[in-house]
Image (cartoon, rainbow, N blue to C red; front, side):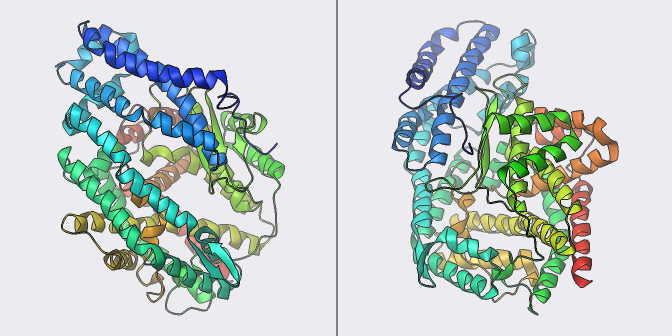
Length: 585
């Protein structure tokens, strides 16, 4: 009842449909590569139509096959069949790379691409991604180099990342007579017992010290690989590559970071105030960052959470409510924690079946209800892009959190408004402040840290001690006197998986972008009312076929200006002031 239904994809790995589609994907890829030279002799219009229609079919099969494998592993990490299937299907990666590179090389020789596109209604649907593929030529190596890189990455950054996952998931330490995992130790940061929080923090640091040496080589190996490939792909640095892949201008990021930096003192005011409430006079120690404030005795069943979300989504728009209702009734959601199921929460849009699947670890707290609303926002984003042409499915990380943050905000505001007591209001509001502090202040520290690691890696292989010091420097610059500098967390570079991707660097600033972009859109919604909802839907659909600045411009927002980001930050300032007033009274 509380598990998701994957049967719209496949009934199992032994099912004829899964076997046939897996084989068909290999055949299609091989056939496309084989036919490529002969098809190139056709007119540009005919050739591009053939290639993109082939890609539509491969994309549909990939979404179905890889989606089923990935979701099966997430639901049960011990699923041997799923893991074997993943290994087999990953062998397609170099072939997909080769096909993509051949496509780019073909496009670079077309002088007037729009003249070709304008001859076909089919190609007009893909104008943006065709131009994007041509622009990528500037930042591509030769066909042979790209294919070789695709294969080497499987034995380079990919394995370093897997090693990090293995070390952190298997790490244990004794705590009050029991052996606890790193995840279990970190969860004690939310304990109501102050001594337990502090002791758990000290144990967390001990765990990091046990694995910091191999982890230093892992992060250095990955960052060294990225530095090298960025250079060979003619980027100034890894940040330039990350911005290119995000469809985001440097001036937009600069405006965002400048606004964040200017508002850091306000967040420090909140942290110091929380510290004073908890009896600290030198700033908040790291181990009390997530100390619960106020009190909420309310527990939600899954059904109560569903009802609350449906009610609040209905205040926004019927289409949003209908998406959530469909998710609940058609079993899109895997709700409860269990052994071998991955932690956290996520939403996966699946174009092949025009549905999404959501994984959560619902525990009945208001935070779990908010998380569910957040993931349903991703599903709503999926519903919008399913209206676009099949290959218009990929949106970049900065805009990925737009709908989810919007939905989260709707539910949070309602929960706060309906809180039965002052203590419950404090509890809900301070949870929100914990979240936004992570997304603004801690994300700023992560951006600083990753920048410094890339720079250090150009000249040396930083030791674990070097990396600890770089992490401390970044935390001090971001948190300032908001935290007690005697109790920071030098091992956070080990904990955050985002640093260990060879293909997605600087996976930090998109979180801040998403939060503040969504807050800006929500403010416009409040000002304009329900008539603005269709504009929001258009924004969501535009994320797959426009650069980020152009997406924002569709609703009259200029994200290259610092003033826009300050609008979102001012709403957080208001929440901080309200929290201080509530806890001073």
